[in-house]
Length: 178
View 1 (tube, helix red, strand yellow):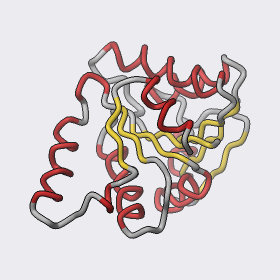
View 2 (cartoon, rainbow, N blue to C red):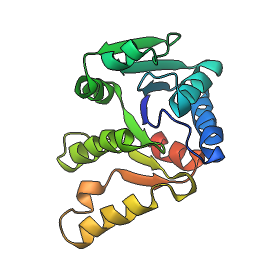
View 3 (cartoon, helix red, strand yellow):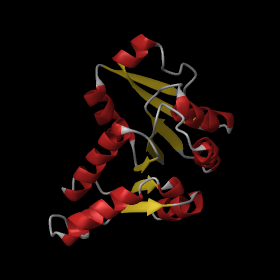
View 4 (cartoon, one colour):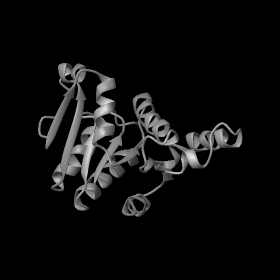
C-alpha cells in the first residue's frame, strides 16, 4: 500500500515528534508499504523518509519545483516527482496514495489533509484519513469536526473514514482492513 504522510518540514518543540516519526517510517518499511511524502530532506519530513529507507523500504517524494530550486529535496529516494507548483504536488500525492496520514505539521499539512477530508465528504475518495494525534496535537481539530456534525453542517457519513489515532498499533489495525 502507498501511504501518503503529510507532516512538517520543521522538527517542532516536542521531542516525541522525532521519535514517533522514525517509528512510523520503520513500521511502513517493515510492513512492505511505500511512503509517499512531500520530498523534503528537512525536519520531520527528512526523518520520516530516512527511517523508511534505513529500514529497507521504498520512498516516493513529490516536490514542487520551488523547493527543488531551494535545494531542500531529497536525492536518494526510490522515486522523486518534481511538480511545477504546490497544487500539482498535492494532486500527485493524492493520486499516488492509498491511505493518508496527517502527522503534526503546520498550515501546509492542514491544507493537504483538508483536501482529503473534502474529497471524502464528496465521495471522491474512499480511503482512510488518519490524524496521528501525537500527544493530543489534533484534539482541537477533532472537536471542531464533531462541532460541524453537531451543527448539522457535516454528517457522520461524510466523516466515516476519518480517524484520530494515538499509536502505530491503532494505525496498523485501521490500515489492515483497507
